[in-house]
Image 1: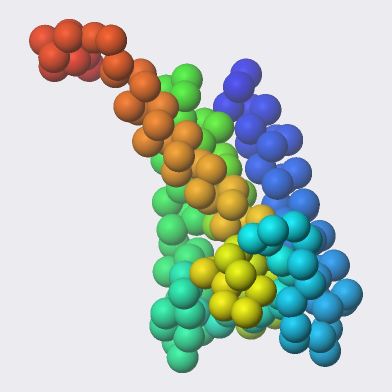
Image 2: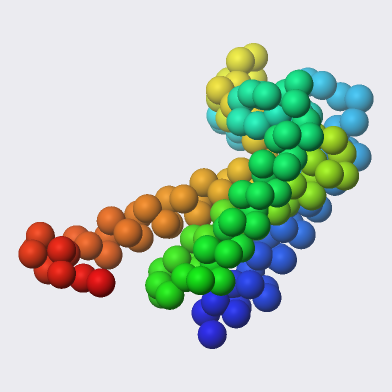
Length: 161
């Protein structure tokens, strides 16, 4: 039941929220390349990233798109095959972020980033909600794996299937 909820509701909702905010950012901040402060340490700043994190591989849009599509498909397979109670939520968040960034890349030729963290003059990084979904999913995935094993003896851990 939990897996069905994540697949049918959570993933599409997260994708829709991310794509909606990217569309809003593109339409609202088009032509404005400054920073709009939201609160200390966070501002809005429109940026188009044709590469991957930190602008790596920006000159290779189709290989990046194909690798992103392959990774998204691999996440879907992992999600479908998962027998864990904890993994569906985490993988669903990662899958939603990856799928949303892939859709954005296919529609716009790049990923739309608009949330800047750090100072107004020199932000540390600029990302979008899909990147936050991915980060949250990774934290849930590895945090859940770590927390699931806390409080058991090393012998009990080695005997688990």
